[in-house]
Length: 367
Ligand code: UD1
Image (cartoon, rainbow, N blue to C red; front, side, top):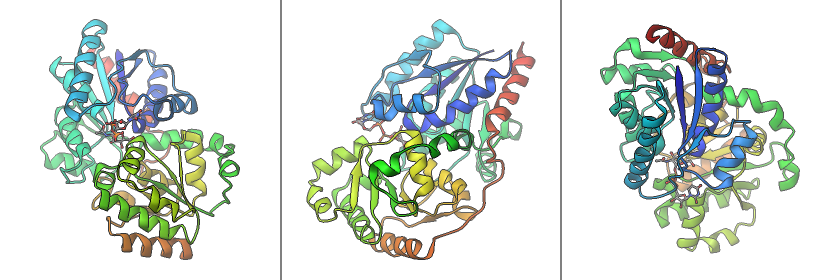
């Protein structure tokens, strides 16, 4: 069975490696890696292939950035042409980015069986483009691979046949487990002049946080205040970098020299920083899970999360976008050690194998 494994944007890269590795253990499964090119900068894409030791993509669709509809449409046109010529038997998509949605639609329209890894997560916030991508992908996927116990009830409420739902655990944690030792050897702490547990690490790039000048200014102001306690390291996503320039936020940053903006980091350096941070502040999805696994307190700068298990069981606290709350929760965590948690079920490093087993069974049935 030829299995097209699709990646497009940064948060996909750490999810696909374990799937490919799992598939390779079965002689009847042939993984083919498709990169849509949604993310194309070396710092957003290439470095992850190197750090995660991913195979070179078998095919690169080179779609680039654009409005959501144009980007999604471009991926569809290019992926459809590739599917028509290469005729994969199965398509695996991961996560919730525009490439996930686009390739799911193509597979579904061409009647190619489709598996969605990280199915069933719901923020119940349709303002988030990712929520729309998750809803549509799950509604047309044939196999829904879930990462946590709360995902299946979401899917069942939407009428998904329980036989299609496979609780396999968290693939991103597979990658983390595989690369943790190597990341420990990263020299990033020395390069940035940081002490173990001596800094706060930040990522921010959600349109809802960075696309409105007053919201972004308030959040940066709160981070500036936190930097008075311990330095704050903020690897800046290209979208956020653009907004800082556009909104003239450089002045604010100059008044807080310990709020330090750096270029986006590779997987290993970022993992090393996360593991050694006193506190994480983020609006990313995956980082909420990674910090829960690592036991690092995390403040999520959003009103809701599609990953509630990181709050109920893990180290995550939702702080919304109120700067006072970010400061009070942040200072509390920095001074008192922050929230402790436990590791959710099946976040054990073996998810890729479980996905491959399901696909191998399908290969047998359809042979
Ligand atoms: C995408 C995902 C988001 C994910 C994020 C992680 C969707 C809907 N969103 O958002 O879920 O959390 O990736 O990074 O798919 N850009 C570059 N270089 C690149 C890529 C992007 O400069 O390699 C710039 C472009 O100006 C682009 C902007 O960043 O317009 C946004 O990129 P895009 O892929 O549209 O969405 P992200 O905000 O990265």
